[in-house]
Image 1 (cartoon, helix red, strand yellow):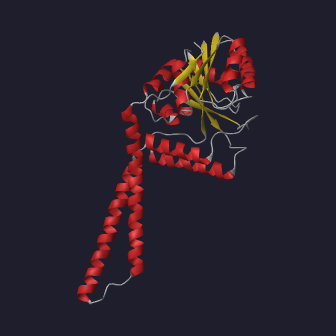
Image 2: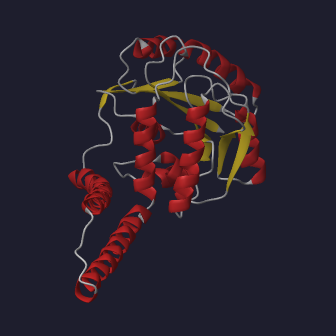
Image 3: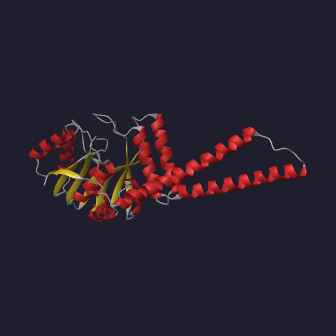
Length: 309
């Protein structure tokens, strides 16, 4: 089989030589792979990542690359790599060697001998991450699965092998705001996941800080669930009912008992409560409206500055 390996890269200087050596070793072990291509997608790196890719290409004509005009994000890099791939089987993996290349053999076996269309990977643990980050990640997966009809498995990674038909279906979803984990689940097909022990980065540092992860989680929720809109409507109805009940209580107190309505703190708290709900619902609506705005403009998902071809 012809195997394509797609590798998004952002400031991965010093990592690619080791990655290339390990991949070549694993590819040569598998007799089912007749030929291969390594597709590096440089997502606007500021270091010497592109230079390292070009140097590797000089020693191996089977290496291809795409270099963006600026940083468009990992989702855009994944889309560009999948679109450029030509293989019967396509592997998506990170450049930092946290995705064990030796799993490629098991992935091929699952597809060739067991008839699966896609083989994903799930981390057994989150060794090397802070407890706070691990907690927030676990909470996100529980939250998005509660809101969305599309199941996204906890600790799922982007490391995945796919058939050509599966890849083509993913590419058919050409929306600007992409959440690949959700797209992989949404397209369906016959899928299976395999587990592996989490591996620390050998060099470099993670590009995903808390703010980037927060933005990514919002992208996922907005892209695959309209439940927040429903929740905001429920909050509006509940607020209206509570305010109506309080209004009736104060009215009858004033008419029947002649009681002067007091409670300056209550008024202030009510204003802040209702104002908070209004701002929350407006914010939710704004998120969906902003995504619609970006989709309507039909901007390209990425701009390629340089290619190997």
